[in-house]
Length: 258
Ligand SMILES: [Zn+2]
Image 1 (cartoon, rainbow, N blue to C red):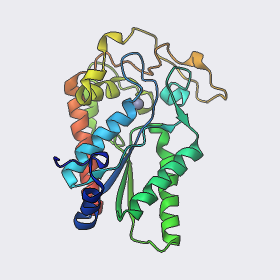
Image 2: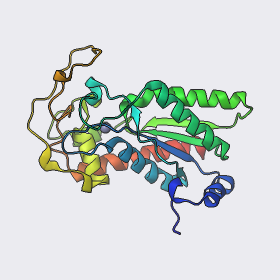
Image 3: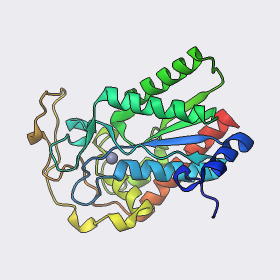
């Protein structure tokens, strides 16, 4: 058996040994199952989050816990909403409890250094709450030495990277980067076999009002479900972004845990 950093590929005793003897950092990727236009797969968010977690785990001697594929509901103005096949939403309370339970289990296995790697913008406050409640419940149970780092891997992008990525198309803002250049380029680099660039349509991109409606209005979103166009994405742009994110995640883990 080759040395894997993926919990799902480890035997229980090897997993246990790495936590006990190596004090391994446990990384939990959380994504979404959500439409990403005609050209990207439904699993884009959890697949990229898992890729980031795996690369960072290789850099810091960590273990990637089995990922949480599903995430908080797709919002019209940031993810195109739930009106296309496959988008599978969790209620906020479900996501909070799911993540909290998994984190507490990882601590029960002996892990004290934990990281939640978010690949879906809409998850962020629910993951904050899950981490907060997990730590509080652990403290009530007398476990005070567990620490959780939580980050959206794309939290910060260097200005010079933004300039390079958007050399051929204007930066639409991170909230409109759904199925756009960023995600298309990252998938071209991480999982090229799941991208079909020929399926990106020419379509008018949405102009959202400064409010939300419940129920949401699907007419606000373009037919493909993308909020900006990934047409000019390339594997080189993907490499630039992914390698920057991998090094930011790795450096953050080293800073807090090593
Ligand atoms: Zn996405």
